[in-house]
Length: 195
Ligand SMILES: Nc1nc2c(ncn2[C@@H]2O[C@H](COP(=O)(O)OP(=O)(O)OP(=O)(O)O)[C@@H](O)[C@H]2O)c(=O)[nH]1
Ligand SMILES: [Mg+2]
Image 1 (cartoon, rainbow, N blue to C red):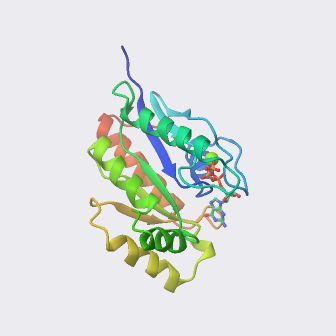
Image 2: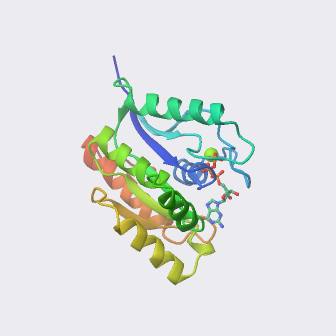
């Protein structure tokens, strides 16, 4: 059976996952100011048999029940662990404007921060380090940005490539897209044209 090549896009609710997919695939999927816009796992064809996978946000959302959250988490894990879903590599989107607050508050409770857990999980399941986006950099100053990078560095993460991006100003977006294209070309051993 022919297997598709999947590139899942993970991240906390509202990090900008669907925005990333719309940018790469030239689609107009709904994005939202409020967390919880994407509720279903949706593959979107990028090119040939390569699919970006829009995932619901992973983590707490105000007014969302714990049982719905657990269901969403199970769905994501199941998708990523299903041997029928070939995962080329993952893209993990971090919201740089909230990362330090969420991370520090979980650390205080002795819980592994969600973004860290997800990056490690992607690496374990795909055996390749994911691309990590420090997104919404238009919303943070340099010192906060550096703080985020420092926090990430305190975890022994796989050798991930970090791209600072803003889909508002488009800063860093082209470099990120070139990286995605390069990885696809490298892994599939073909030259794609007309992206
Ligand atoms: N300022 C700013 N806003 C952004 C950026 N990227 C995305 N957004 C906005 O952030 C909000 C959430 O974006 P989505 O793409 O819906 O986020 P998501 O991760 O798919 O969210 P869920 O589906 O709810 O998990 C939207 O209002 C986007 O326009 C960015 O780089 N800068
Ligand atoms: Mg979404």
